[in-house]
Length: 78
Image (cartoon, rainbow, N blue to C red):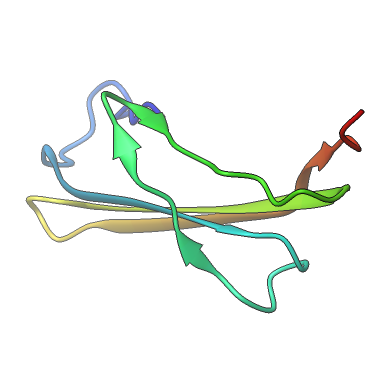
């Protein structure tokens, strides 16, 4: 996960960064830890889809949240 500011923006440095994951099209969300810039996801032992939500707040109080329902497919395990 990488956060970038637009050139010339007055946005502050990232203060809080969080990610969540859902395996039921966003009905239930669970925190997904971020380690060294990578979101850690443990998939269930079933096929389906993963939905992702990322949230960030900067030191100036600006906030962003982006959700992608069915961000990627989880293939069946063989």
